[in-house]
Length: 415
Image (cartoon, rainbow, N blue to C red; front, side):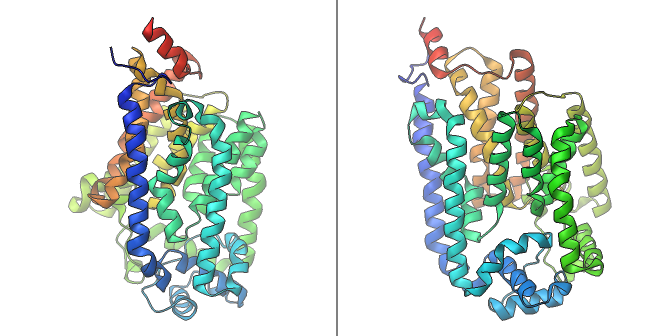
């Protein structure tokens, strides 16, 4: 039998817990060393957020989604470079208006400091859910948060994905307290990443969790109305057109660079990654829709109860998303970390199903590393994501949503 660490974890789990976060944090630090000057030169994703906020402050919101106006604003307020399209609802820019009174470089560092503060809050929210992992090493929960590569990319790019991660962590805490409507309200505030929050909310609608859906509408509808008021209906029509064609070859991509679809860790990316240029964009979209419907039909049969429904819906939202940038995958930290914590004890037991869930979560924790070596295969992450979703739900249905602690499992193993 595998020797056990005093916490109840096998020694190979302890070794991986010691080595993998250290290596991934090293990747982050090396990226900062190599790329900081490049991003400070105006080439980060923060470029489009900062310039769009400047457009709102200077009265140009009625041209917010015009590629020519965006290009002009980015070159004026940040520096000469190729346009990075701003494709978010306008209401989010109100958060960034204070940064427009600073230079781009200073605003970048202020946002970095704010994101680090948000990460600390996320850690405080997640720490009680990672007690088993802390039993291996007390510092492991914090190290895992810093080691998750999409979070590191969100930090260095000046992205808003950390804010969405915080909203999801708060929503999960509300679910734990039985405050489902409030969880929906908090989730609805994340409509600036609607490609994730809309599928998540639709899954709750599918499960007839009306309190959550009501909460989403209470915050999402005012956010949408505010965005329309800020830009006008003409820009809304242009925005919808951009969204429809942004993730496939089309004439509009003569202005905006084509998204690298096979780097999206969702069904859309998986279908494109497998079929690539062998079929037309129409068939890519059609096959993706069929695959999504099949997943939704499977989800309709689950109908989970309790706060774990949010974890399943969060994974589903990522899998079913229309588009998914690498940093958007930061939200996966929540279900991955909780799955690792709950099921780490099964590695010291004969629980084969629990081991499967744990190993799928462990694989997904390191899978983003492919972005550094073989990025064109990153879309394959959709497969272990689907595996984690349905294996976890099946285990929970058979055994309840509770997983035993490391000490309990280890104690029986020793006996």
